[in-house]
Length: 233
Ligand SMILES: [Fe+2]
Image 1 (cartoon, protein in one colour):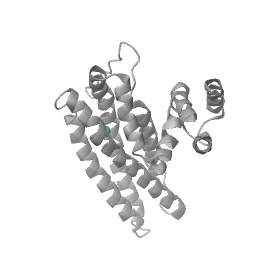
Image 2 (cartoon, rainbow, N blue to C red; image 1 turned 120 degrees about the horizontal axis):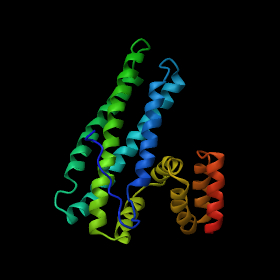
Image 3 (cartoon, rainbow, N blue to C red; image 1 turned 135 degrees about the horizontal axis):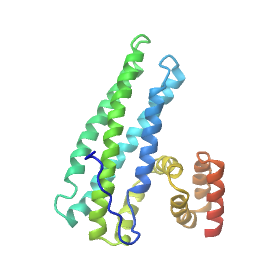
Image 4 (spheres, protein in one colour; image 1 turned 120 degrees about the vertical axis):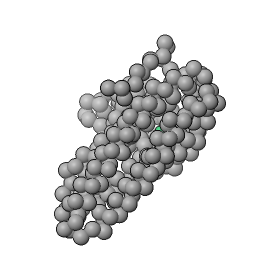
């Protein structure tokens, strides 16, 4: 199993720029893949909702790889020449796969009922390859890139890179990212993300974020989050 890279934990806790968004992307990818696996091609509403979910997923993936290319890769290459080369090659493959998925989605939307089951199955199979490659790719980034960033930069510098990415998001992109990240995180990670947001955002804006996020959490996770945010306030 040579594709399982060894993650070397840092000697002391360090800021992980990847873990939150990658957990969210893994959850969104898995959810969308399962959705297409069980899709009834004859159910027009279910089909439209599934294609909308696919579009939202690949839009988020496309934006994510642009953020990494523009913000994280230059920092990696400044620390060690060529440090982002493998991930850059993967990103080119992922751009092609995203274009192919968009094409297949158009074909499914425009297909006659008799062709639809076969086209949905084709899309499902291509999506499964895209998801599989992304899972390996994200693991590479979390092992190799984190190690490089931690060697070259302190946590404040790594957090500054993350803040540049967050500042570039539209309100819709931010909500979409949080919608998948928060439920996919551990209770402690949720609190570490939402606690500072509660302190920094205008209360009305944070309430909007919190109302959206609550919708996707279990009763048990909500109790932990409510309690943690009260203690942090
Ligand atoms: Fe990436």
